Length: 242
Length: 122
Image (cartoon, rainbow over all chains, first blue to last red; front, side):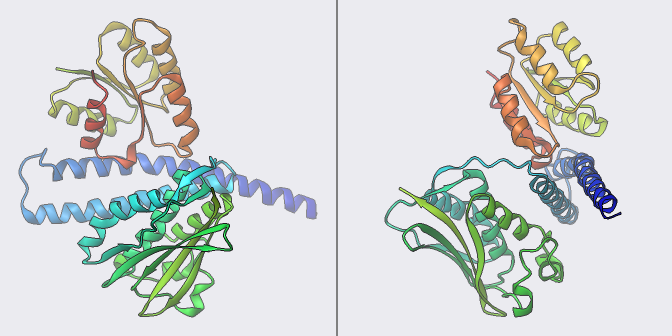
């Protein structure tokens, strides 16, 4: 009986994964159509548009992009759970990676009147990681910092632990995370994320994925400190290589 | 005027990309499955092909293989497009087979795709 239950459980699990994978693909196609046509209206391809139309269509475009991001995250969760996400571990220039990200996020931060401060070290730092996944992981942490900060700044700095671990700290002056929720933020569809409202609501998958990405690269991410109304510091550590 | 073959089985996306490329001055031909794509490539002279991966009859990789095996078309730039997940294996496979670019459709607006395609036309 136990064995049958176990088999049934495995079958259900694989059906679920298959269902999610197919759904993700089927959802993306119509969303691509929505994104494309909305962008063409905004480009003026269908003729001149008023400021009101531009505003409404832009809102629809942003909402649709959020849906696309959610599906994208779902697909990655499925890939990770199926063990289908490959990691190409090599020597990565950490300072260059962070510098490029700081540059990429300068504009979104400026739109919210926030400043990004990068305390760039005066020496090179190399770590062992998959360059794309490392970038994605840090991108996730920085974009969260911007998303959850209404005023002030995001400060990114480096430190070294025991000579062999290189840590990137991302400190914001945002809303902070309630103490009771802190232990749950890396869980899938974590309540700490889903209980947020309006603009600040994320997909509930970003930190879960970032954590899985870190683990798969023998790295680690954690919430270093957080206080409601003061801000949070997230840290990511990777093995140093010479 | 550059000639593009858009291979896309979804009618909404096919029409959308055709409109955008035409607006940008391209001469657009559409194919809705892999076999139709191969037939049209054999009967025409295109400057570039935008090729979906998941297609009826022949998939995008089979079409790409067909193009690259024919010495007449080996320099024809092919850009793979997809909305499938787990894209890295597909990306590597496409590059090894001779595709010049690989893009996830939902990541780009039609005008961004036009720019990407233009970059590959000699």
